[in-house]
Image (cartoon, rainbow, N blue to C red; front, top):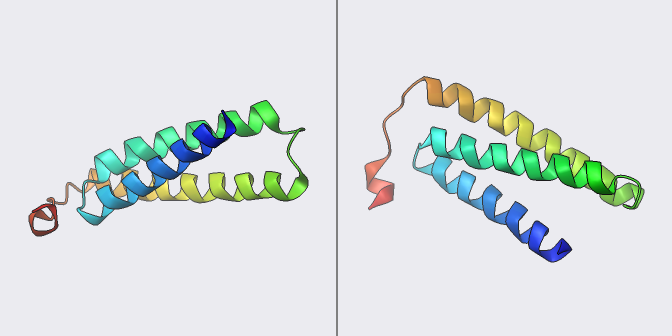
Length: 88
């Protein structure tokens, strides 16, 4: 189960980065929302079971994801067109 959650975290993060690359900021924001949700749930569920270094790792990842989410939401409001060359 732990490995599956880590895999999901990586998948959402990578897919959000690819959406950002093609300037599909709305989809990137959705994936980042899922990432933030998973990280938050993981910390809430296992906060006392994790070693302090692992706990800090997840807290840092959560903060970075929240910052990135804010940036993607802002970019999404600007309605920048997709980069069709990268999509092809």
